[in-house]
Image (tube, helix red, strand yellow):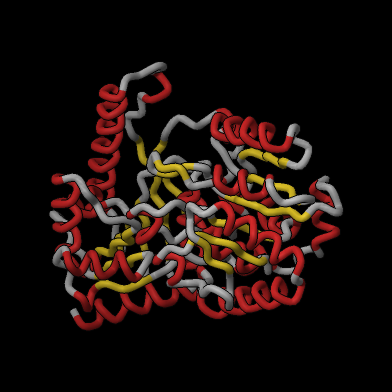
Length: 400
């Protein structure tokens, strides 16, 4: 099967979707598909300008092809732009990418065109038969135009893969045929988590205090303009004697805000390990250096029902005890008292209590971390996800 994955993104990117897409392309290829990934040719950030080798940067096999489509990208040329200017520039890039992708798809002999971009799939659907189109949905659209576009895409594609059960049900409510909608949670690349060092060794390599009880958070500190609740984590960890907080991710401006809050609570930043954005291949080793890993997402529609955070599955694969907000989307994967401790997202006292409990109860820590590891390896790897998706697509094509 020749699979063309079209993604309107800059690659490499600091955002998690780049890692998710690249690892999925690798998994599709491992499962037997001939995979080509099309992305936008955009200006690169200074931090990633030297990361020319996408496969090396993300630590994946060079088993799929990559093509960069020309796009009009004016964002770096308009410093201090207004919101209106930013929207116009974004729209210009989106339209040009979509046009080039449509022409390319028309000229390409791909069995399946796979994308998470509704506009791309809608336009390609005007010239390509339904049996060739597959949609990976990560959120419900809300604007009148974008919602109408998503609804049309759901009716044009042969299969839709939603990252949560709630999202799948929502898309069915929007008009998608139930038999064509499938749940495909995010997952992990199992090879990244083989032979991780013991906690003491990992802490020494990271340069962290050996006797600190380290609570870690990995990932962007905001998404689609929404705060991810790391401020609550700062307040909770700062109140636990002997605890340290590790933050891997950006943006740097948000990190500095959190650093200022930590200093106000602790008096200095000696036990705040704010590492900024790091290459993906360093993350597993840093997770191994943590004692507890946290997902302090606030309660809102996006995080409560649509988020399938890769950090959750990576925490599980790293055999870390997990504390997380008690949200429906997370409860689809982890269970309170079995694979994690789930907490009210706005109750700082409860988060403090959970951290202390895990620090003082090694048996609980071990039980949660081992059960989480067994669960992710059994059910949430990219390889298993890719095989499921390809099986669904192959079955649908056979029935067409």
